[in-house]
Each structure stands twice: as structure tokens, then as C-alpha cells.
Length: 468
Ligand code: HEM
Ligand code: HEM
Image 1 (cartoon, protein in one colour):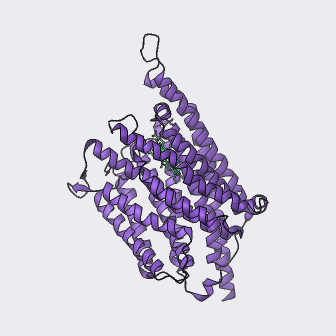
Image 2 (cartoon, rainbow, N blue to C red):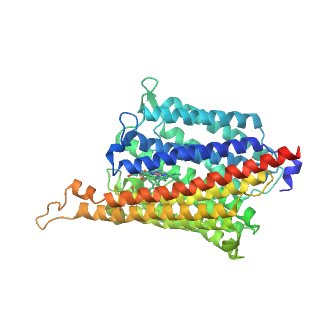
Image 3 (tube, rainbow, N blue to C red):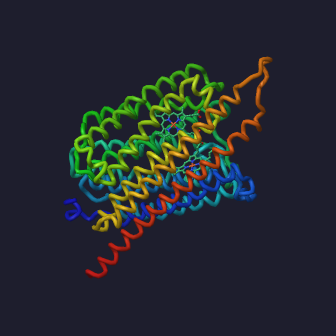
């Protein structure tokens, strides 16, 4: 990049966030493997700290906030500096944010293990940590908005729009859903009660998917796909139309998590309708990605990062067909509460989110250290292992999910339930074991990634020490 000679980009903070997110990613994935075993081998529960109830929360929080938010902070700063053609407005603030971020995630880990929880999914952290999260987000917002306002590049590329929408939406969602009355340092009660609480929680919950697991990774996809392939994005107009319609539609879909609950019927229908509408803007980005690489499909063979990005956007495409389908009442009545949903989740998190993140990191770190990736061969092994691991995970969960739903619904001619709950549960065991196998393969793949990153940085440092 020609710009890096002209401006003093804050690479150390970017690298710090990337390393932190990789570290938390490893921790979170190990907990994922652990809970996947606990489900079919209860002896792996070690009370009181390491039981399924606590570790599941640790798994989701550490991966969403440690891996996800860590990589978002780092790569948002990397992209913003380049897209605005200027260094961060407050580099020291960003550095402080890095330390605070790691402290907050470590505290989240400890408090969740100790069972301190608000009992709201993806919003379990207690109120003192919520305040920490808000402070971290304000730091991000100040730096992003400040840098964008003072930008030297007039045009705003679509990634910047996605970055801005993430910063605004998450701030609103997080603050509203976490409004609570403290009852001591480690206990609080939500400001909302009953159905209102559930409604606000899922308005937050689904938009966490939208603005934490979708828009930031679309920002990365739109930036790093053209950068790494050297092919310009197919259509800027399509990217902007998809951006505005996605941002508008997402905020109405939360109640699709509450189909067949006491939430008013009309609200469920609005959420279902907007969920189906979401297929259009989601596929706007998928098609844009395909047509971009369509200029030279041979890159799928010759350029390892194209494979990561195209498979990632393919999983995003499948996810955004599957999601709206699940929102429809008749489908929800079969798959809701079953293992189908973790199958959906992990196609998105392991396929779309993690693949986009690792591909972006593979591009960024060598740039920062002015070197090449250590081994394309190792990256290819990484690619195949995470792909196979994720497919085993998702497919086994879809099969067992449909089986579960069907068994729960089965009735005798007299109208009684045909199977007891325990009978339906016992049939999950082989699939849960297969999921663990898929998880091990995925984890192996991530170890190859770790090795490749470690060797890339080590080689670059040795070379610069020799040159000095
Ligand atoms: C080795 C890899 C992984 C394994 C073995 C694993 C395992 C699991 C298991 C067993 C559950 C509980 C499912 C249930 O409630 O029945 C779960 C939930 C979850 N995991 Fe993972 N996971 C892995 C990777 C990831 C990654 C990389 C992410 C995010 C980046 C992630 C995010 C989540 C989320 C959001 C849930 C909650 C799902 C829901 O409520 O439906 N997982 N995981
Ligand atoms: C058009 C886009 C999407 C729609 C309409 C959609 C729809 C849905 C629906 C209806 C559910 C609830 C299933 C149930 O419990 O019955 C769900 C769950 C979930 N989806 Fe999606 N989905 C979409 C895209 C995504 C993407 C891209 C991700 C990224 C990883 C994702 C992650 C999740 C997670 C984590 C849950 C589990 C929430 C929980 O119960 O803990 N979804 N989705």
C-alpha cells in the first residue's frame, strides 16, 4: 500500500487486537469442545465451576466478545485508517482500549465461571462489566467517527458504511437491553419484565447477530476480497443498496425468535416478513462477491485467500436462506428448541465469521510486517480442516434437529405423545459424538492457522533484526 509510506499508521495496536482475538478464540473454542463432550459424557462436568450451564455461557461470550469484538476492533482500525487515508485521530486511546478490552474479557471469563450472570443470552455479563463494555465502545466510536470526519479521502467506500452502522447499532442495542437495577455488585434485575423483557432481549439478540456477526464481517469482506485478489468490487451501487436495505430490515426481525410465544401475533408476523425480505440484501452481497471473483475464477485454484472468502460468503448466503426459512411458523414449529439451531449458528460462526476473520488476518499481518505468509500449503491444510470440521458439525446437528422435532411431535392414535423426552434425548448421542469429532477437526485446522501466523511473525522479526 502506497499510503503506509506517507502516514504513520498505528500498526502495533491493530496487531495487538489481532493477537488478543486469536488468544480468546483459542480459549473459546477449547470451551466449545469441552461442552460438546459434556453433552454425551456427563463425567466431563466438574462442579461447581466447570458445569455445562456455566461453560456454555463462557463459550458463547468469549467467542462473541473476545474473538469477534477483538478482531472487529483491530480490523476496523486497520480499514478505517486506509479508507480515510489518515492515521487514527487518537492512537493512544486505541492503545488504552486494547488493554481495557483484554481486562474486560478476562473478568468476564472469571465472573461467568463463578456463576454471576444476568441470565439473558449473549447479555450475561453483570452490570459493572456492562459499564466497561460501554466505555470500550465509546472509545471505538470516538476514534472511528473522529477519523472519518477528518478523513483525507472524500469518497466513502461501502466498508466504512458497514463500520459506522456497527458502531451505532451495537451501542443502542447493548445499552437498551442491559438497562437494569443493580442489587449489589454482582447482581441486577432487568428494567423490563415478562414478555417485554423477552421481546427486548431478542430484539438485541438477533441484532447482535446482525451487527456483530454480519455487518462487521461484510465490511471486511468488501475490503479484503478486492485487496487480496486485486480485482475491483463488481458493483459499488449494488453494495450500497444492499447496505441500506440490510441495515433497515435487520432491526425489525427480533421477534422471529419468539414465534408461538405470547408475543402479539402481528409482531411475530412483522418479524417473519422482514426476515424473508432480508434474503434480498444478504444475497446482494453474495452476488457481488461471486461476480467480483467471476472476473477470474481461476483464482479459486491459484490464490488461497479467494477460497476462504468465497466459501465464507457462500456460507453467509446459505445462512441467510436458512434463517428466513426457520422464521416461518410451520418450520419454526418443527426446529425451534432443537439442535437444528446450533447447526444454523455454527454454519454462520465457524463458516462465515471465522473464515472471513482468518482470511482477513492472513492478509493483514504480512502487510503489517512487510513480509509474505509463512506457508500457503499450511494455509490450505487449515482451509480444508475447518471446512470439513464445520460441515460435520452443522450437518449432524441438522439431522438430529429434524429427528428431535419429529419425535416430539409424534402422537399415538389416542393423541398421547409417542416418545418420552428422555427417549428423544437418547437418540441425539451418536450425533453429539459426531459433532465432537467435527469440532476436533475444526480445532486442528485452527492450530495450523496459529502455527502459520506464529511462523510468519517470527520470520519477519528475525529478518528485521538481521537487517538492523
Ligand atoms: C470446536 C469448535 C466448536 C465447538 C465444538 C462448539 C460447540 C458448541 C456447543 C456444544 C454449543 C451448545 C449447543 C447447545 O446449546 O445445544 C455451542 C453453542 C454456541 N456456539 Fe459453539 N462451538 C464451536 C465453535 C464456535 C465458534 C467458532 C463460535 C463463534 C465464533 C461459536 C459460537 C456459539 C454460539 C453463538 C452458540 C449458542 C448457540 C445457540 O444458542 O443456539 N462456537 N457451541
Ligand atoms: C437473513 C438472515 C438471518 C435470518 C432471518 C435468521 C433467522 C434466525 C432464526 C429465525 C433463528 C431462531 C431459530 C429458533 O430458535 O427457532 C436464528 C437463530 C440464530 N441465528 Fe440466524 N438468521 C439469519 C442469519 C444469521 C447469521 C448470518 C448468523 C451469523 C452467525 C446467525 C446466527 C444465529 C444465531 C447465533 C442464532 C441462535 C440464537 C439463539 O437462540 O441463541 N444467523 N436465526
